[in-house]
Amino acid sequence: MKHFTYKSLPELESDAERIGAGWVRFEHDPARVRAALARPVDVSGFRVGNSIAIHPMEGCDGEPDGNPGELTWRRYERYGASGAKLIWFEATAVREDGRANTRQLWIYPQTAPELARMLERTRRVHRESFGADDDLLDVLQLTHSGRHSVPKKTIAYHNPCVDAKTGVPPDYPVISDDALERLEDDYVAAARLAAESGFRAVDVKATHGYLLVELLGAKTRPGRYGGPLENRLRFLRNTIGKIRAALGNRVMVCVRLGCYDGVPYYRDETCGTGVPCRYEIPYPYGFGVNPENPLEEDLTEVRQVIGCLRNWGVVLVNVSSGSPYFNPHVGRPFEKPDEGNYEPPEHPLLGVDRHFRVAGQLQEALPDLPMVGTGYSWLQKYAINAAAKNIAEGRIKFFGLGRGSLAHPGFAREALDRGELDERKVCKTLTYCTFLMRQKNHPLGQFPCGCPPFDKEGYGGIMKEAVASRREK
Ligand SMILES: Cc1cc2nc3c(=O)[nH]c(=O)nc-3n(C[C@H](O)[C@H](O)[C@H](O)COP(=O)(O)O)c2cc1C
Ligand code: SF4
Image (cartoon, rainbow, N blue to C red; front, top):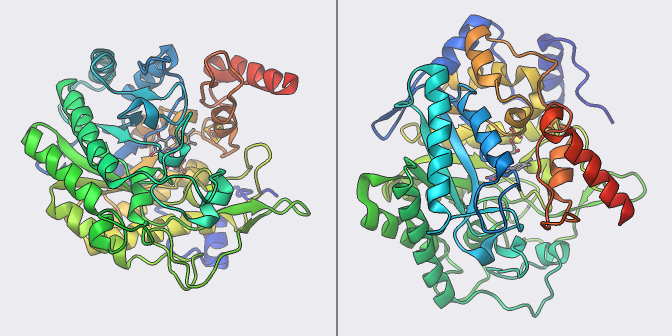
């Protein structure tokens, strides 16, 4: 079913009102849109040149050894020329066995020099386009893919609902406390290499169903890293503390935080729509989840966690939600699912509203800690109107764009110059990028992912190959 049928901003606005998406509001005046997005943001004394962020977006196009590949370089050159002053580099594994696919970036001594060169190229392109890069904040996202690692999954605890969806048997071993403690040091080593490579910041990623957010929701895990919130926070507390002790002010520490895990969804084969899994009440799993109704968020612990992160020296939080593997409509409201997946179980505007509500409530609770908002791409060319409103009213400090930046990396310059986006170029949330991400039938074990409809030159041929290889299979 087509949801995005709006021919004008007032049409979209009245639909948002009609369906109760009260957090989705818009600035209409292009001059005010430009002014809001052009605002610099202070991140712990570093002045970021404007309020526009490019979210971390994995391209699955690295080399088997974890180095960036040709398409990785191309993407970051395009981001450098975009005009966004916050570029959040994609998920980069801290260990080989924490990679989500065979082409995920991986930081270790052999790949750090190439990552440093790619960062420098991004900065140089940015300088050539905009005159300076001393107000460009680059963050490298550090990750362990947990139960989505290949070839061997690592799980923090058993959640029968998530286990069933992700193919984990009930007797699968859980990572031990000692192994977690050693993993903290892998994050520190990766952060050190990132700092030496020139990154101004690192992100200790805890979102999207990967290992660190799973730990935050590990209420039923025994031992030092599970149970009460204090234990579930141990990994982040130790890791951030160790990074700060080892590197001091040489690198800023950020966290992309999954603030609402939700529950797994399945495709109802009669109508194709997503339906939640069966779950017990109270639901004793997950982070940011209301145990009495896990289809709703409960931000009580999330606020506590962000307060702790701030006290431990985290300077920037990127607010996200959901898991791309088990409830993609939560993390990235879409118009069309990837092949074989479910149609959205709610109007995508309600998904956007959830993102804005969660981020807005958190930013309002901690106004001095800058946060990056997520979930704007479904709004297509009106994303910047919503962003400007949120920024102007203090509901977020940075407007982050994910899929929209793959489709149209020049969105930032266009927004800053004109206060309007070109409808012909913007992402239409058709999900071909995720389709590519799921295709493994490639000589390197993974197809690269990008935006075939709006970046034909880069991905038109790749899409054809992926479709053909899928047919063969
Ligand atoms: C192809 C693809 C790759 C992604 N890679 C990452 C990633 O590396 N790290 C991350 O935190 N989120 C990743 N995401 C999630 C996005 O950063 C973003 O949160 C999501 O797309 C919703 O924002 P949007 O509506 O602007 O697209 C990815 C999403 C897609 C579709
Ligand atoms: S393939 Fe392109 S248009 Fe489709 S969701 Fe991805 S970025 Fe957007």
